[in-house]
Image (cartoon, rainbow, N blue to C red; front, side, top):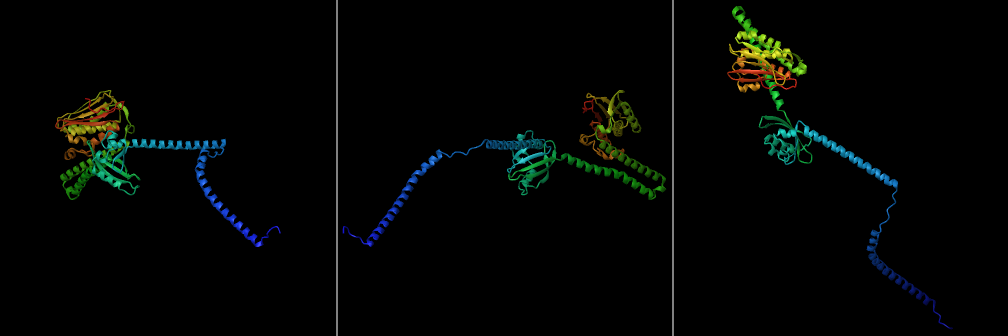
Length: 445
């Protein structure tokens, strides 16, 4: 036999051995490949990133229709922004106009009580001329007023931002004290506050005058009513059986009844003048003044004769003016009656009428009586104001005569003035406006 036969078992073992060697080699090769590929990938990754950055992917293709849509949307957004900006500017302008022209004083204060904004009314209320004197300063630097400082602290400490605090304070200035009503509210989130101040000094004065008027008219009406009732009771208690006493009591009661009627008449006249108001309502007509002056003097002659007081008057024959005849006549009668009443016998009362440089007219009544103290002059034309109450009542005055004169002058668009020297007499002058509306403020005689 040319060769050696291998048993079948030897071939099977050899084949198994070869398979094991192949599997081991493949595993070793796989591990080596994995480690190598990782090292290569680590080296190639930065390079791939650089390549990707330097060669970005191409943008998608944009069509003209898409560009047109983007343009239209952009224009819509721009138009909307412009409209909102215009509305904001309009609101800001309105707010600025309102802030500048408000009659009430407005102060914007921060948490440190420093004034951040003030309108012109606030600048004037605080007694300053320029806004720079107020804005940027603390309230304490601007106005020294303890109640105002306490009110600001109260507003700044308020937790409820919707709650409006209110108070009244008195500001003492160089001219006169002013009563101010202050409303304050805290600003949300900023720790500041807004104050709105209203000068109510005039309203307070009017309220005081009203209260004083009510008290005075009650007193003036009560006095004659009490006198009438008292003398009538006396008559009923038996004085009727005594003719002389009865006649005297009836005469006194009649005088008080007439005085009561005079007060009521004057009050009604005042009320009518106030209701009619201005020059258009009182019904002014152009007429000669001389006949009007003659009638007023004639009405006062009986009283002047009884007191021995001569009345002289001067008025140009052709002098005319637009007046309400009955009202102006009433004003002259009141001035002449006062002058005669407070003049001593033999002293002359003079009524003169003339033309003013402005084209208006002036009517003055001058007496040589006791005169008026300077302290009484500012209040002389108030209702029921008397310099000598006892003497005025004894002479039959109602305390409303000069108030009626003032209202008649105002109803004509003019005014009434007084100059007086104690012990030498007084001059009352009614000044009526000319064609240009100007009023002569001083007697031109």
